Length: 200
Length: 216
Image (cartoon, rainbow over all chains, first blue to last red; front, side, top):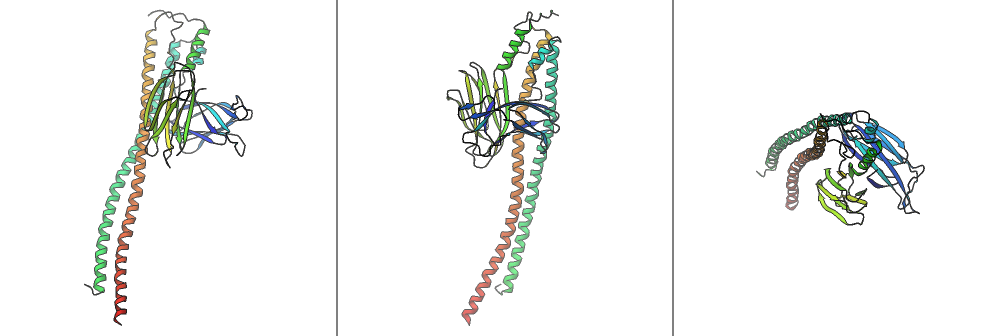
């Protein structure tokens, strides 16, 4: 596992995945705990697990499970939008000791990035080209799904811009009307006042 | 059609695949960077590997972030302040853990959503040529060119999606600001105008009582 980063023991770290609908996501992680005595990250810490929570764009929870210190999770998005994947350790230490932190190795694969070498070996009897073609078809389907999602988002963008446009127009008219009517009321009110006070 | 080359024994293929899998990796992550925060990522890279780091700020404030890339010795390979988008390619000069950090420490209250794509090594060839007797067939070379084209399509799509998300974020900010400011201005207008009239009236009322007192 390649990329890693550090978080505090009780901290929750979330990453955002903007996905079209019906997209399969694979996640692979490994977590290590910092040992103060050895001044290094332990290779394995018994009892250390991670809560993995996946939320949909609507806020619903799609996946919420406790995995061990090393785990794989996957989910399929039903709606298109920003899905949030959160990691939090199950560490129950109330006061995290100074310098205590976790190292999380993470690998997230979305949609078509499934050039699985082991699958190619398994299907060695089948024509290699056939396997590659299947992979290409998967890639094209992913591209097509992203295009559909892009159309949805563009519509949302256009609606926002049109709303801003009509907001500006409507409020400009309202403010001008308020200005004129209040101005007229001011003059009338003052005129009546001065006449009443016999100053005019 | 040229005859298909005989396949070599299994282990070399596995070895090639294993090596290739080690070498080529791409991680892309979108995360939220709170204000006054710094987030660092680390990756172990072998010497001589060509790597590319690309990042873009999607939402938040002025859509900029500080980025810094260091090699295992702590030498800064790349450092840019308040950049909205950039792409940096380098070749690893030595083995070790490379570190790159995104910092939002200059911002007081805006969260930023940052996307980055860290590509390590080149992608393995679709049809490894180590145990191949003949050249690629037409089918295979067609596969290779389609694969390359699709990779660049997906790359463009990702960039377009990020730009669109950024544009939409700006549009939504603008919409909110226009709505609040218009209502606020209308209320201020009313309050100030009506207040002016009553204030003016109150000046004249006071003056009258003073003159009456002086007269008596």
